[in-house]
Image (cartoon, rainbow, N blue to C red; front, top):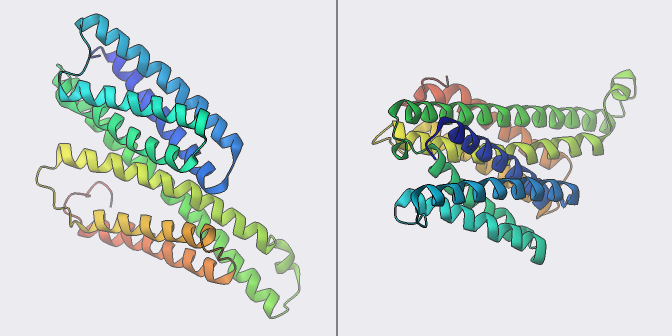
Amino acid sequence: MIDIHITRLHEFTVLLYAVSVLLYFFDFIYHNRKANRVAFWLLAFVWVLQTTFLFLYMEKTGRFPVLTIFEGLYFYAWVLITLSLGINRLLRVDFIVFFTNILGFIVMAIHTFAPVQYQSKIIGEKLVSELLLIHITMAILSYGAFSLSFVFSLLYLIQYDLLKRKKWGKRLLRLADLNKLEFLSFVLAVVGVPMLMLSLILGLQWAFLKVPGMPWYDMKVIGSFIVLAAYSIYLYLRIGRNLSGKSLALWNVASFLIVLINFFLFGKLSSFHFWYS
């Protein structure tokens, strides 16, 4: 599993797995069966690739791959994916499927991007750099989703105020109706939350590999988890408490203010996020 082409396929597999997790999260939140089907078939393709890698490695070494920690991690990830596919197909318990895949993604990411398993130091260092690139890209994409979600919530509040004060006119007509604005804001938050969560998983792994003795009380790390918590609460209020309207829009606006504070202020206070600010 050291050949550069196999390494690229491993990276591609992780990215496919990330997309599958995002779609499972969307189905878990929004009960979208089409998203569930696409996620299932993506995960099935990941399983086929993982199984192929597993048998190729067994043929190369002539033994079952469980004798080292990295072999064990790979086999463990394969078991989790297999169980996830079985649960999704036979039991259809979305809660278990989603969280099983989160665990499986963590294990697969640890195995794929850990440089100590590669004989070539150059390949190992390149993988760690690519891990950082993926982490930053996913974080920025999640912030982009949160930004658009904020815009729709802000438009919701403007529309709400115009309707309450009965300010009819062209401005009111150019804004979408309240239900559509609230729906779009919610959907973008649904996209942003799992993307940020996966970004944090990859970012923590990069920090563990490249920043020995990293202070876990680092402001950027704490701020990122606060952002994740704020938007997770937003989703809980929308789904679990059936909260809607002005109160939910205000919570979303407040959550985005935390995003801005984390991006512009906490990044400068961080001891190692110099590339982020």
